[in-house]
Image 1 (cartoon, helix red, strand yellow):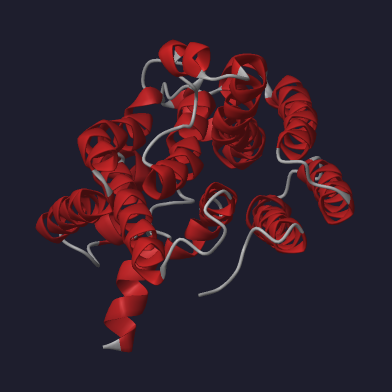
Image 2 (image 1 turned 180 degrees about the horizontal axis):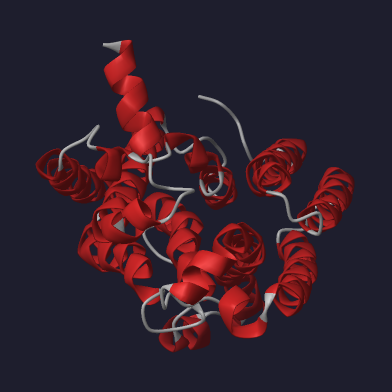
Length: 317
């Protein structure tokens, strides 16, 4: 049983869930801060099911549509579909069941999440097709993962939190209320932008491994279009802008010392990641891609939780 679980977890790279999950949980915690407490174990569990379901669906879809290229690429030829470890029918079944799990979990969360769930599934799966027609495939992957914090926010609040014009003018302190609502509503959007920039940076680094293969087989990416050195410069720029956006997120949330310390640690991790990426060996790129980015997500989640706890806006119940 454990070997079967391990095989399927490896098929969809379940371990890579650590990339988007910390940002989703951080958005959940900040969204729940206004309600003065943990959103509830039911909501937490449904967010996990929805997120894992969406990601599993997207990853299975990626493996299915890319199976021909995976079979030709020496780096990926031993993956489960090209090597026959998993059948195409089984992969399709997993993709469909995961999509159903995501939609069902969204239905139990709130109506807005349910109505948006098919849109989210289309977006997260669409990324797998983009390398065939655009050099900006990394941007589409970033958008796909940025749905995680937005989805978690909507799961807790059921809305972004912006103030309608009618409510603004009905309020006796309409300008101050508008500022407070605008600040709240911008928080998940700014966090999502940070995730997009983060993904652009480290997906460019990951694409370095397949530069020669992609170029010879007509697959597109910024690495193929601009060359490895220029693409690495773009990745570094994306990560530096991401750090600026994360700093803005902290300001919007009124975070202080713990967040600043975490931000400096994230900046150090990203700088180290780019130093490692320039070594260009596959093993070093995997370290830069997986381990350091997992650390970035973990640091961000911890410092956000600490800040909300310090502010008295997060109590277990």
